[in-house]
Image (cartoon, rainbow, N blue to C red; front, side):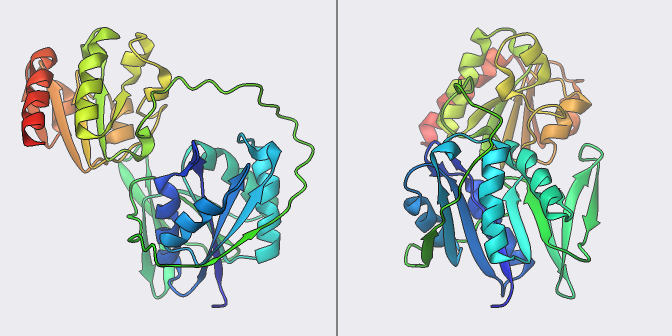
Length: 323
């Protein structure tokens, strides 16, 4: 295999995020004959994460462990990944379009003096030329892009390209690279996580989102219960965040997170265009609102007109019966 594609894995709380496995699948779509080399950066032993990436299709993995890489900084991660890129001279690089990916990849592209296609939701082949599809105009249209020269550098939107089937019998080489991480101007003193633990919002298959119609912080409790029953995550509109019903870490929309779950349940959300930009590509949308004229019903696959405080408990009760 002459071509190499680097897949930059991303860990959260000691586990690889699903988008890391999706990035491997994306790399295979770009060039099925290329060698897929995983890159995992962090602190401590990373061999276990490397094995997991190989189980999902990577051919081999390079890990970079350093005490200064315990918490993400673009300077630290950038130095570590660039060192691997210089060693491998890859034809392509793939990473998730996550908060870290959105911050890190433009800086890497600048250092490498190459272009970057961000937020791809699918990859097609045209005469063996990869064509990247990405949304524009807040999801109202889609564009197709190709790379004519240089490194094929792309970020993929989570939950759009299915990962390859996990094969625990797969084996591959895992190498540890020593990098002198220096000159980090950003010092992380403390990390305070306000978002709830559990399923990551940007990668959740099921999302229950609340809007101003939830009326209060207390009103979000039934949504958390419904999300727990469905094995999903809780999100919110900007209106709910502005009203201080929940933390901004839960915000979905043009100025928040962009999500594409299998099931999106919009509860007490009117359907402002800014919110739709963050969730309109969800596979199935269910709207619950007592106003039948709400715009959210125009994008919903299923709609329930009624009081959410009556509907949600009934849904929870029926779902529990099925389970």
